[in-house]
Image (cartoon, rainbow, N blue to C red; front, side, top):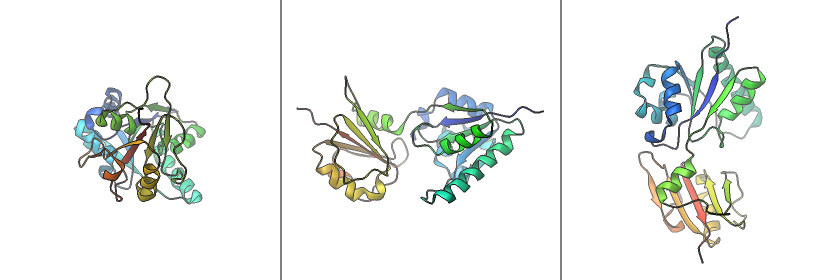
Length: 231
């Protein structure tokens, strides 16, 4: 019986091809099957980042895995099951699959859903960490996220913008573009220092150093850092 291949959930970093890790580069070069989320593999952001650093990825077997951004749980389950089935078709041939993700595969990553199914079905899965969007944005903005005993709070797009940022430490707001006007109003009332990066490390990058600078129509890849003001 042929041994099953391994599925690798590989973090591709935040957008700058130079932030792709050596391990990610090695796995891309050593394996023939590269999967990414989307309908067209070559249009996926994670693919374009990798291609800028590892041009030979163009010659690989490219596998698009459609992961719709919807709230219908049943349709999501169907999409995840279909995605896992696609990956399993290659794993059953004894081929490894490198699934490229943005940022890190352990932080709000669609690969997690596939991982759960693959592991349940008995396939080996390994995660390869990548530089996260929020550490990249902090570095680009030239600020620390935490020192000494400060806490860090990471909030996704589903957080309720009417709730004040009352805990001590630094807040990171991810994927807030869909309700940016409400988020900005909450930030104005927070008394915090507000910084933001849009498309950090990607073409079209924009940096904002106050809540007033952030446009209401800021794009999907906008990350906000809300720091306590120093006394």
